[in-house]
Length: 411
Picture 1 (cartoon, rainbow, N blue to C red):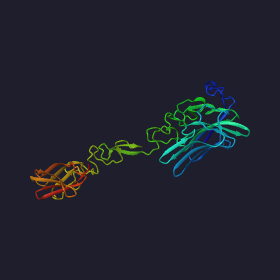
Picture 2 (cartoon, rainbow, N blue to C red):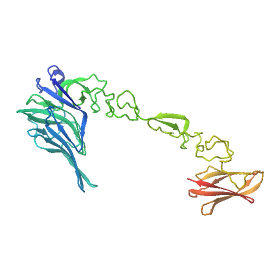
Picture 3 (cartoon, one colour):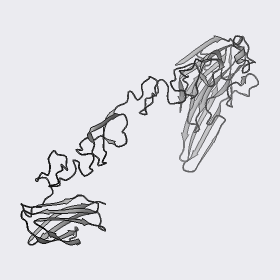
Picture 4 (tube, rainbow, N blue to C red):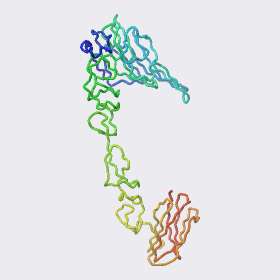
C-alpha cells in the first residue's frame, strides 16, 4: 500500500536543526511523499512510478532476463514517459535536484549482468549492486516542470530491483534534495529494515535517509527483527509481538545420555528445535548403559533387562544353544567390534577341556583356543584382531557335544 504524506514545509520553525543540511530549500516548498509499503521487489516485471499520484506514470522500472545456449542476460532498465527524464547515476541523500543534474530523457539500462555458462561473468551499469540510493526524476505536467526522487536498490546480479519510497516538490520548477521529505518527526532505522526504533522518541528532520516514519521495531540492531517478520526458532522475538518462538510447532525430545539411539522417557524437553543430546525416541529403560536398549539381545543370568521388555534373563529370548536343552550358551556383546565373551553353563558339574573355534562363512577356522570347563561352567574372552566385518560361527566342543552360535563383527 502506498502511504502519501503532504505537509507544508516548516523549515522556518526547524531552521536550527536543518539549516546545515537543506539551507537552499525554499520555505514555501511543499513536498508530497509516498511510502511504498511493503517495499516493492521486482524481477522479470515492470513497476510504474507515479510521483504525484494522479494516475499518470512518470517513468517505468523494468527487470528483464533472457538466455541463449551460451549466455544468461539480466538487466534493469528505466524508461521515462515523453518529456520526462531521470538521472542515470545513483545519488546519496542531500544532493540538490535541479536543472544542473545530468538528465536523460530516453530509456537506458542502469544495471547489466551477462554470464557465460561455466566460464565468465561480466557486469556494468551505475546502479549494479547499489543499495538504497536515490534517482532524481524530472517530469512535465501541463506547461510546468517538477522535480522529485525515487529511492531504490538493484541487486549485484541485476536480477531485480526494490522500490522503497518516492517524493516530489509540488511547486513547479522548485528544487528539492534527494531524500527530502516534509519536515516531520522520524525515527532512527539503524538496521535498515524500514521499521523505526520502538524506544526512540524521534527527531524532527527533513531527510529520510537513515530514518523512517514507523517506530515499531523492537530491535533496531537486527534487520531480521521487525513487526510481521517470520518467527524463527532462535530464542528471539522476531516479529515484535513480545513473545519469542511463538507460532512454531514444538516437539518433545528425550535425553539419550548413553548415545545408543534410544531416549529416556523420564528426561524430556519441549522445543521447536532438536537440542543436542536429545532424540524423539523414549524407549530406553537404562540411559546409563549403551548395551541396554530395545534392540539389544537378552543376555542370560546377568540380572539385567537387556532388551527393555520388562523381563530379566528370560530363557526363551536369551542367547542359547539347542545342542543340549539343559545348558546355556551365550556370546556378549553381539554384535561386537572385535572382543566378546563366550559363556557356557551345562546342567552338570563336568570338568573337561573345551575347544573354542571361530569359523568364517567359507568354513575356514580363523581363530581357535583351548579352555577349561570347570564344574560345568566355561567363560572365556575372544579377540578378533584382523578379521573383516561379517557373520562368523563360534563353536565350543566339549567331549562329544558341540555348541554353536553366530557372532556379528562390526568394527
